[in-house]
Image 1 (cartoon, rainbow, N blue to C red):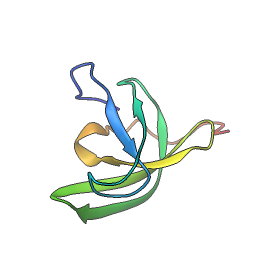
Image 2: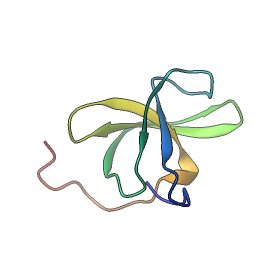
Image 3: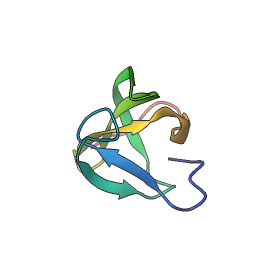
Image 4: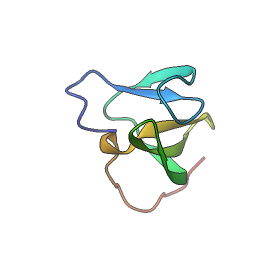
Length: 73
């Protein structure tokens, strides 16, 4: 995650701001993109999987490409 001014990014169980908040991801969190893009609620959303297997959705503007996953899980 990036571009949060250190606040972190909301990680939700679905697209749209009304969906349940799973957690707030730190700006340096690394995740695997597994689905998207989805245009909803005025934002572009991507579904991510964290290293621990948790899956959720974040707004595109907080994602920066890091390259191919190496030894994911």
